[in-house]
Every structure is written in structure tokens, then in C-alpha cells.
Length: 530
Image (tube, rainbow, N blue to C red; front, side, top):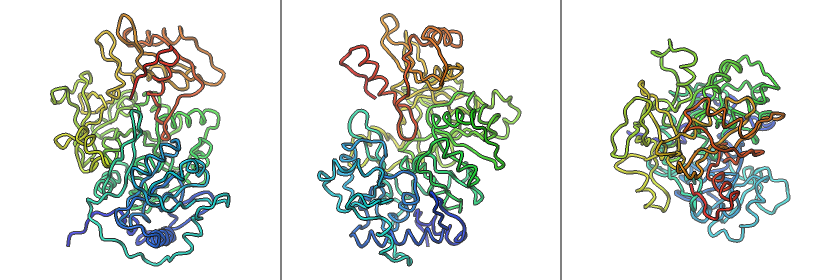
């Protein structure tokens, strides 16, 4: 008999083989996989008593916590759909998402409850609000009391098909309302199998949940690390201090994060060097990091650096940048440059870079095209938005909006978002390439490059820069620095010094906000849009 690919099987596997092993650690609490499963059953029984049925949406507004992690499995046992919410949005954003998704129950962390208060009376479908870490300051249901009131016994699950939607993930809405990405059990299940292989996940791993679990289900990590009986450390706040403390205290072996978070770890390490006995591997996704980042992580920290690429609409991971065995004789510099790229396609995915007439670009590292993807991870579509679905998925291919090149060995390198490529005097400029050069300057902590209008060239690169504490640099100095390192047409023509760069919750720099800030600073009413 054929068994459908349903995500609850992963926790079943862990309980059967690793029942008495540490499963999740959060603050001063530790639960084994058997204990975690009992809590999941209590959650499912409680939700059923609230009237949650197959297909209903259950929303979560929480940091990385035990409650968030067990929510995935507790919701899935009912055949309900998880709606993880970005913790850095505004109340009006939550109002739109909760009403648009027609969520029936909302779980919210006590520290974030104040974001729900302004919109509570406008929620159209939410019937029950349950609060994690309830401190008695609100009248909502206490999560711990809610669990204790229900049975730990095996839950009678709803029958499911692998094509049923399991999670609804809302992408950032910078040009209007966010879109809800529908991922199925099959999407996440096969993505998990692929990641287990490429990320080399085993029962010896200790994962620190640095990447927010609301961010594409934490790249699906609650699934494949659970399936393999790995120990998972939930970090409510992913500060460098907390991360380094978890590495020392719990023997962390693997972490997923954005380049900006890695940058903060590197800065922290310079002042607080840490010697680790265990091997540690870092999986980084987002803007391509400078090759110098790779060298610093591997040579100074002694951790393995692995770049991956993905997007919410593809479950998300599609490519990985590990050095394949037949390139072992490459120099350290060559290897670092390869590792800083998006990499090559993972098993179960077909990734291509195509030009405007849908032909694959030459493998010369020069010709730029759009990265398109097809495979088992591609979303079912956008929730209640057929038009956007048809724009994004064409002839079975997901059009990512990321512009890329392919080198002679088949490594894909992201050069920019389609909307972020700078066209100066007819030449295409990668803002990521310019940022990589700026990061080589000793005074620069963070940098982001956007296009700004230019009378002669149409547009040119302009940089927003955060300086390292105690360091100084002038606009003229940085312009000259980039002119020495790059072709002159790629060099920045202006600099805005700022205290910090705007970021998403996962650490991605919000360039659309920088573009808007630029226009406001020059007194223009019109704004760039993402």
C-alpha cells in the first residue's frame, strides 16, 4: 500500500528511534522526543476541542521557541494549516494576514502580544488567542494551562493527501499586500529528504535555531533535524552572545543564518574569541557574501562555510555551494570564490539561468539571465491570488526574479534581484559585486548599494555604509577605494553614512527602504518601489 508523504511521519520516526534523547532545549527547559510528542498530542487534542478541522488555518506569532517548534506537528496532526507570522511586522500587517488567511486560532508570544492589541477587535475569523509565556497581564488563554488540560495519549489524526497544503507563508509586501505562499506536505517532505543529504544531517547534530522558524518554516529545519533525531536548541533572541553561549553550553554543530547575522558573529568573535572542540558548519543564504567572509569563517573561526540559495516559493532551498570532490585541487582563493556563490542545484531540483528569449545563458560567468527553477519544492500557488501565481509559475517553471550567471563549472552566481540591477550607460552592474568590494575596506561594518539617477549615465551606484565602532572614512575615500578595485563605471558615486541598515527579521537588507530614504533625502515625491 502506498503511504503518502506526510510531515507527521518525521516526529513518529524520531520518537520510535530516539524517544529518550534530548529533542528540544529552550531557556532552562529540556524535553526528549517522547516528551515532545506528548506535548504535541496535548496541543492537537486542545485544538480539536476548539473546533479546528482539516484545512483550517492556525497562526503563530512567536520567536524561536519550544512552543513554536511543537506547533508544526500539533497543527499538522489535525490536517490544519500553519500560518507562521513574521515577528517584525506592524499591527496592520497582521490584521491583513490574519483576515486574508482566515485564521481560526492565533498563538502569540507574551512579548509580542502588544502587536495584536491594536487590531484585536478587527479580526474577522480568529476565535481564540492563546499566549505563550503568559505572565498574567492579559486575559487570553495561557498556553501551559491549555496543554495541561488535554490528553497526552496518541492522537487520532485526520487522513491527509501529500498534496494537501500544510503551511501558508506570507512574503514581504513592499509593493502592496503580502502574498500567501501555499506549500504542501509533499513540497516540505521531499525538500527535507533533499536537505538531509546535502546538508549532511545526522543524529549527532545539535542545531541552534538562529534563522527564524517563521521564515519559510526555518528553511524546513524543524522537519529534517527532527526526522534524524538531532537535538534542537531554540534561541528566543539570536544575539551573538546567545549564539556563542549555545555553542559552548550545548555543543552546537550546525546553524542556518543570513549573511548579516554571520557578520555580527565575526565582529563579536574578534573581541571574544571562542575555541570549539566540535566541528561546526554554517549554512548561509541571502545576498552573496564577499569571498573574504568565507575565508575568515573557515580560517579564523575554524567553521565550515556553506552557501545555499532558495526562496519561499520553492520550499525554499534549491542550490548549495559545497566544493565537489573533483575540485579539491583548487586554490584556497578559488575555493572561497566558489563557496560564496549560490552553487549547483540540489537533487530533485532543476535550476537554469535563461535570457529574455528563454535560452540558457553561456557558462562563461559573464552572460546574465534570470534564474528559473522547477521541481518538487515549487509551491502549489499563492493563496487566493491566481493572477500572481500565473505570473510567477509559467510552463512549470518558477521565475525567481533573481539575476544570475553560470561559471564554466556550472556554479550559479546571483548577481542581483531583477529590480536591483543597476544599468549605468547601458552597462549592467551587480550591486552585490560592489558591496563585496566595500566589505574589503577596513572601516566598513556593513554596506548596501542601490541605483540613483545620474544626468549623464542614467543611473549609478550609491552606497549606504555603517562604519565599524571607532573607525572613520570619508565619501571621497570610499569612492576612490571602489575605483581602484572595480571598473570605473561600477564604482560608487556617492555615500550615505548611517547608524544601521534596515533589515527583515531574517537579516536581509531592505533595499526598497533605502531607495525610499534616498528619494526623501533629495526631496523627491516619487519613490522607487520593490
